[in-house]
Amino acid sequence: MVMEPISVDDAIKIAKRKGLKPGRVKNTQGIQFTKGKNDRLEIIDWDEFKSTLTKRKLQVYESGGWMKIMKK
Image (cartoon, rainbow, N blue to C red; front, side, top):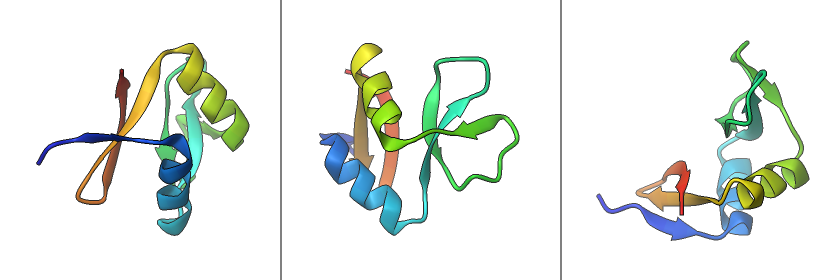
């Protein structure tokens, strides 16, 4: 499957539909989607998620319902 870049707004819609929240790996700048059940992650708000994507030059990619955050 080919991973295609999608907009942040589309990623947020997909995440919400799947019950996912934005998370940051504690004590790092790493971000990912989470269901909120991982002790290594802290839930952040969507504005901080968007800001981190921009600052770190990251993009959300999607393929077949799977999403991944990678460098642009």
